[in-house]
View (cartoon, rainbow, N blue to C red):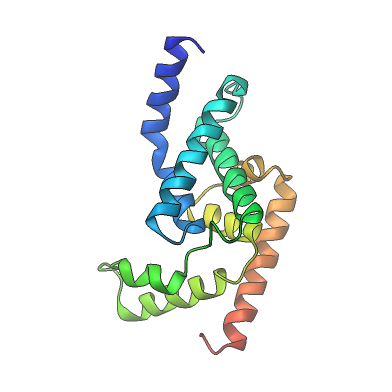
Length: 168
């Protein structure tokens, strides 16, 4: 790659690195694993950048590469990279703007989300990040209709899980 492409990539990555950190928090249980996963995502983004044609937004493309990297690594080395224990992560986050009831509702939701498979977690994550179905489908490599159907099924599944467990 030439120097201007490198500068462009670094600038975009610096501007949108929070995407990678959020995905790392979803799939990494500790700081070392987070750093390793982040580094692997950056490497995969760098290697793939020459094929980025700008047809999708950089963020959509980065989500796709980063999620695929995280899922591939998680499936390939379950002992090395583990998902975050949502209960522990919630203890580290202060929801000062929420009342106690909202905190409990979030904790209940994340307890249920923790039980979903990798693709379902990714879909819920993007949905909660207010991504539209077009971006979700593009990122996950599924049709927009499939993304909507999957999300509706996941909502039903989560509601059932929460109801069955009395709100956890």
